[in-house]
Image (spheres, rainbow, N blue to C red):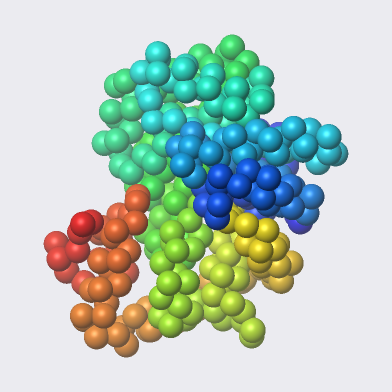
Length: 319
């Protein structure tokens, strides 16, 4: 595993992070803890969780794993989050998460979870959501102030220009990159650490492998490797957060990193050229069906999907 300094936090973060929202059998606590420890023992040191993940079991699983990781030599870093911007609920959720995780202080805990637009951000400001995080940081409960976003470049640039977040956990992958890369560039330029989540497009990329395998530009490259390698090659991505269900998934992610050789800018452009050509070969009904399936996923920007699949924007929606 390799590590990169996460902006100005002083953290050396693994290039692959562990998304703890997809455990295969979340009520099998021992098996899930083994999955986390397999990742940690192989160099993954960033773990992202939340109270609601995996039928409300994810933080408990991480808490058990943390007790073992504390015995190790590799520093580890934890991120969690809640949906509450008001002071009473935020403080309660933060204290609950700390208790579940067995921590006195957490690296990242945000109530800015899934901000989709500049308008969303203005509402968060109105409720004083950032103030709650800053107060918790001053009390020593949170080390760094973070945000998670799913928004187009211009909105992201405006948000990050208005507040100096330490990190942004951002929905960014090969499918939405044409609409979000400039925002990532701006974030990087502002000194914000970028952790890219949803590298597989919330599962759409492998689901439609016969279409999206156009992103594979190297010999013997799997579609998962193609998606992760594209993200790792971005100069603006510090770590790629992968949702991992079990030890097999962890090993696949580790193997993807082991086979990684950075793309040149020409190769990154080739990925998009091949993908655009493949989509253009599909008939309209097929493109529309895929677009509709994508729109059923959380935190999807409909305008981006319509542009990607070249379909009429008002004809796709979330059921």
